[in-house]
Image (cartoon, rainbow, N blue to C red; front, side, top):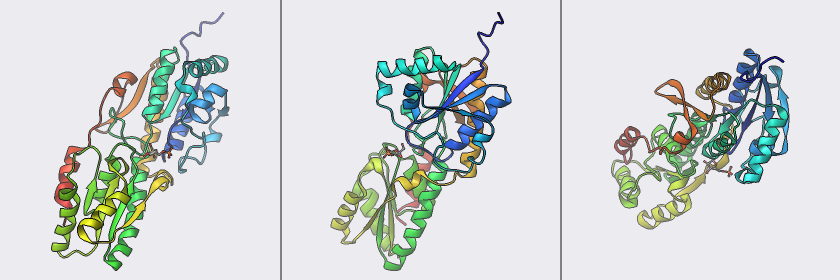
Length: 328
Ligand code: F6P
């Protein structure tokens, strides 16, 4: 009988957790890079639930055509509670065995990587690709979806500014990010916000918001843009406090899920493509339990457990610059 123990012949790919623009580009890259190496690809639908239930679709070159430019994920996504149980994980392992999968590429955020770690502890080869608009995965400078989400938020806030300026109003905009402020900080810098609240910093409300609005008024401005990361508190409560302290009547906009949609930007398409290629490269060369990372522009990878133990703080330089730019 022919020896085929170490050859990677068939892999699975799934997207899990909150979707992010560029996930489709990553799926496409995994499929194309695998086929390039003579490896078959099975798409697993609806995240880890699909692995539990055997919800699969065969993928070839054509089935991933015309998706590089599309937001969302053609494989659907889910947050699987069943996969958190030992029983669910065992079912998933059985599906991998049944399908003859030599490895899995899991695209998503930290929940996805905790799932990947569990799978790898059951002996399945797994490689993770960071895809989340929150950009909160510590081992990588960049997560797929962040740039598109930031640009969507910027476009919306620019529109808000037009009407705030005409009415000489204060706008309070809530930006996604779960418990991280990376998106809010970046967007706040890009729209020239009057004030930005992020969860990572112990900001004093009076100094960071009220005083900055007052300064702006003293500098001759009559409209104000306050950006709040969802993890730093509710935009409605922030607006209430501004009203109490300044007698302004702020208008609140919660940008919400609109930030998760839309055609991925060039940065997200290219990063997703590079990461997808790298993930297949790792599996094909016998690697497992790795996360693909982008560090200082270089593609690399790291152990999932090591990566999950890391903490990502707010970008200090961006925060320092923000301090100088706000309130004027
Ligand atoms: O992790 C991505 C994200 O969009 C967060 O920014 C947000 O807090 C969360 O997902 C929203 O989750 P859901 O889509 O389940 O409402």
